[in-house]
Image: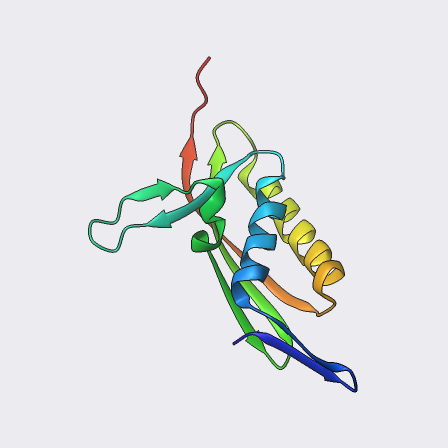
Length: 119
C-alpha cells in the first residue's frame, strides 16, 4: 500500500518502490555495507543486488501512514555488525522521515551475508 495524502490542491501518492529505493540508497551509503541482498527462493543462495535493483532487497509496509522497513543487507568482513545495523536503523529512520514527511515506525535489518574484501 502506498502513502497517499490529499489536500485542496489534489493528491500526492508515494509508492512503496520509491520508499524502498530511497531506503536502499541511504543504507548503502553507510560505512561497512557492501550492498543489498536477495535470497533465492529456489536454492536459498544469497545474491548481492546491483545498485539499480536496491528495492528488491527491501520490504516496505505502510499502516495508517506509518512505515516499517525490512532490509536485507551484505556487510563487509571485519566491521562491527551491531554498530553497522544501529547506524543503518538510525540513518534510514531519520532521513526517510525527513524525505517523505511520514513517521518511520521501525527499521528491521537482516544481515544475509558477509563479504571479505580482497587485499
